[in-house]
Length: 309
Ligand SMILES: Nc1nc2c(ncn2[C@@H]2O[C@H](COP(=O)(O)OP(=O)(O)O)[C@@H](O)[C@H]2O)c(=O)[nH]1
Ligand SMILES: [Mg+2]
Image (cartoon, rainbow, N blue to C red):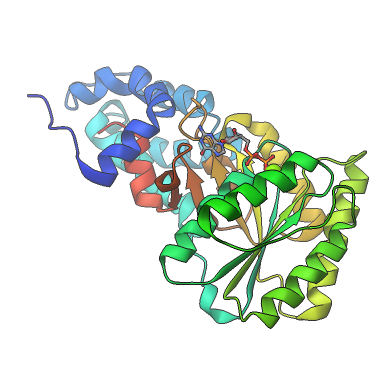
């Protein structure tokens, strides 16, 4: 008998993750439709699907370790294997989860970092409106002074959402923008200040030095700030994203991750790879361009939406 399609947020997340999900459906769908029929290749199929979805060696080995601890016969049954695999995935994500507690400081300062095109500015725009809708006052700072278009893009988000944006001219010092923004946020009693940053400079070393400087400027004005250094990664960049996280983490000591574009990739498993590799909470996932498509990360909902059952 066909299972009813799940409705609501849960069902929609499942649709949004369509391409990543289909990697698992193609490999495991047959076994899932016959959960009590032994399939001697089931564990191998799962392992292949995990690697294809970019779950990475680390996390894949952890998941397969749990599956291979099942007795030989059970390893052939989807009814046994999938719950164990899902639990192993949840164990990996378990420590890597936790929404932002923005009430601990005022202004709560979020510095957003990541390579060009990862989705930083878009994520900031969506976040600003979400916070505003929760009744919080928000200010944005255009710290990507390297590209004129980046400043305009943030200003457009600000105008659209009626959120003030602190900006200086293209090419100006991003540390000075951060300084101005901290002062303005304090003066106006803003709840949340979100600072955009560049994803590309003349060299990678320049970029990391600039990010370090922005962080120091903020820290001098409030020693508890930035309260969050959020790295945005493009879920479609696969294992490259892991190297990027490592580099940024070394430069500015990240405190959280947001993984975008999970709607457009068959490799959504990078989220598990990152979780397994770094002890960093995944705060948000991006599953589309709409405002509601930036979701607070929920491991159970994510795994349920990703895996067939
Ligand atoms: N499909 C999809 N597109 C996204 C998502 N997040 C960001 N984008 C798009 O990715 C592109 C680059 O985003 P942008 O915020 O400018 O990246 P930045 O260079 O890191 O600031 C834009 O076209 C965004 O609309 C997402 O979750 N899903
Ligand atoms: Mg940008």
